[in-house]
Length: 547
Image 1 (cartoon, one colour):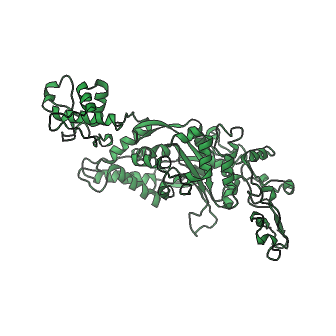
Image 2: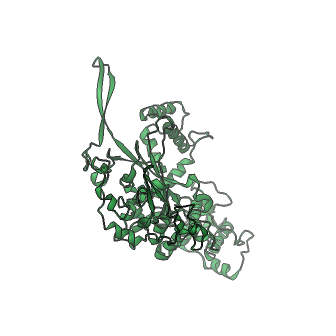
Image 3: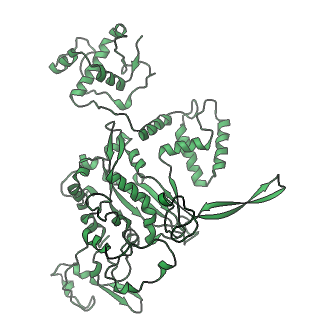
């Protein structure tokens, strides 16, 4: 009896057991088989991604197992076997055969889930699979605020109505397990009421904030009907005051390489970028090239990912509540081609910072889980399975720059965009003027950036009745930023009463730093070895006057 195996298993058999020397000699010398079916086709290579399952029926593309016990039965199909082996040898000679590795554990879970995605919801169902039904059901739950108890009741109802042989989970826990394996899950991290700390890692077990002593809980009273007691009873339930919803970054970056097509697109900047001096992609920028020059080990691996971070506040309730502000933090992978990296479907939602007020300078408290993951991706890397090469590799990533408006820029960088030195490009050389009746600052030094012979430099009437002869200010370098950090202590985060008091030395301050940003403070003492890589070149881009 002939046993049939897929192409991938045939490849493994050839590697383990070898093959006849005559086939190699015939291939190298250009000889052809006497059989009509034994002709070598150099344009054909085995497609390991479309391998047939073990229980598939024999077709023209399947190959019999050729072993010692089945030698007699295999003789009848020797011509087809010769064709396959010769094609494999041809692919090996021309570099078309992939030496595949076993996927890591995370990849195995996802690949098994892809197999389940092909399974019909019930026998004969053409409109939905098990996974697609669960995803759409969860989307309805989120859009209309269906409780977990109601969703479980709906699952029980579907289990009774669907035809026999359906594969719909009968409990909410099994459904949530599928959603987690898809990577659609997030982590709930409790936060202090005053944005002092996250109850995370060393503070995870605390009941009150270590800084402001506020409780992490709020008590909610709920009235329930109690038939046994003959009346209603009041139940007290503890709920967290604030919840940060964090979407882990590392599993989502790993998931991108589990698609062969996405894996190829993520290497576009390395393989297909045209270097003709024109700006078509972030890879043509000075910051990108500076990282390539300073960290060649990172640039050599085209699969390493470079990210941009964007954040801004918005009101999720429209005009119903104009005082509420929630802040999403979004990551953009810039490895993708220019027509894909700016598509919303390729953005990665990193976290949702809760309201009702803007986090302000305390946004660093909420960014801490993301920074820890970014540091791990830079310093250690994570083992990732690449569907394109069918091998595991070490994935590294770095944060290249941020994208935000001017107020959000102050929150992320720590340089206040208000007051005398509001311009982060001019810093201490900012020319300001206090408007007595308008009670605000205005800035008139923009003519310094004009060419020396520009006529506007001598135009007094249209400006401040002065001739401008000064040169443009020089922006801060990375080393100068770190040097300025040493001149003041890190602030204590949190919206407490003490932090609202106006500091008396504000008029004497020669810089406009309001905190040591979590991005820049990760660099202290580690500028060339670890941390988030914000070098001098990227700092110049971050502090650009036209940001």
